[in-house]
Length: 399
Image (tube, rainbow, N blue to C red; front, side, top):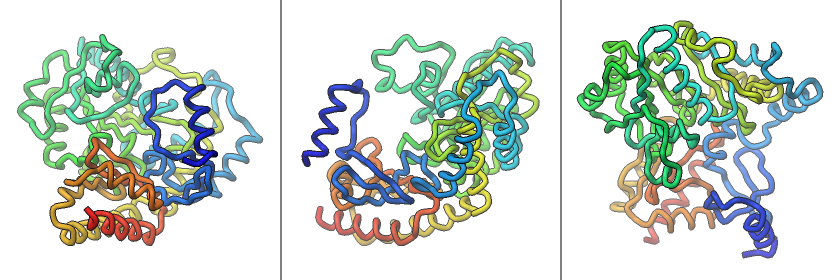
């Protein structure tokens, strides 16, 4: 441990709440798909701040948009009309079948907005006392009390109970269990097309279509959490589009403003009737500064066809990893994912492999101790991905 890193680590231990298990790095600078630590070591970033810096670190166009807006207007609250919000809403709604947007500050808040809108729509518009939300085992929807209740993991809720009532979980890929869980009190089903925190687990398209069909049959809402998988990462602008779904409501955050804290919810005109003035709000959500940056981010994603690029690079990576799996028999159990949202489930010690990758200058995530999770910038160079595969092969051959 260097003296510089030790000083940062000691400062954190004395000043911050111990709610994070940190990687053994103190990052001081980033550019594109590269990060540098306090000792000057360079890393290839295959995590992108957990799918956040989709356009890379310190993107020149994003920096210019941020600087320009910073001299114009930062924040006035949602008591005022703001053109920046409207430009962002137009761009986002152009990518989907939805008609109305709500802006907030994070993925958890975006999912809270989904949950609240679903309940209020059922009661105020449909005139039904329906409030239950059904989610899937293995999901992750956030850490506020409501989104935590939707997530349903005991390991995350330990010490925070009782959680809000009105949430059910059913096994994924089991339509019979889903239909059995639906009652007159059910308001909506919330799913992730690809379960990100669950270890990059894409759900089968026929299952998701079956869930949507059940929602239509029982006249309840079908909602998709696009917080991690949305915004071009899976090879379409939204993950639900990879399966041809038509959710009533979707949530998003992560890469929406390429690193500034922002979330959003999109809803159809019909369902958006559930909100009225004063029914839901946020002080910071959709402020001029973050809205301008988010609008530039979405503009670049569309202009540069980054969904297509994610699809092409993702297929290349899956082919490379499948070939690697053959060359190191018994070391890789499965390669999963869509686009640039990939999981490599190992049979050997995931922690040892992850640590060696970090030592050799590659940053990724280790999910559930066994799955290497890759969420690189969408504009990363193919050479960086190929270099990762070569390095991973070298490491696995040593086991």
